[in-house]
Image (cartoon, rainbow, N blue to C red; front, top):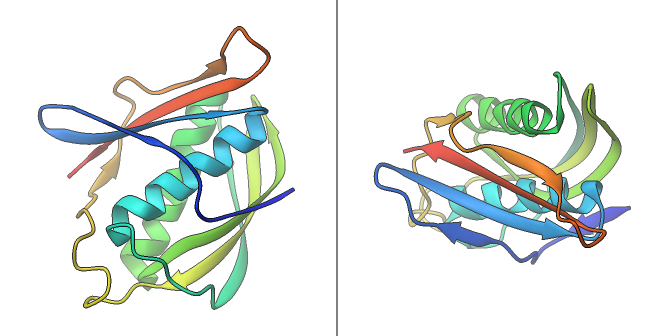
Length: 144
């Protein structure tokens, strides 16, 4: 399923970092919402039109590690190409890895000036787990 903006997320209070928490009816929806929350932090919430699509993958051991790895791949693209996620289709997600088709939009220094200067996706308090009600919840913290 392809997910598009807007998607809900909760910004977490943290002393030195910025964090997000999301919920989804499925693990795939929770992962897509993490991707969008990350994009919203980078852009300051300003939308941007998708210019291209790219498959992005991450291999790891366990859902939290998969989420950290995938968002690190997106941060790498932001740092090197100045692109933000504006659409997300989860092609594969399991405890050993994930692959998404990301719709990437160009970052605009004027339009997105309120965005966070994210330096890293951290392991600190990373969670990605069933919520006990049939859905999933996830959270990540970012160094700023």
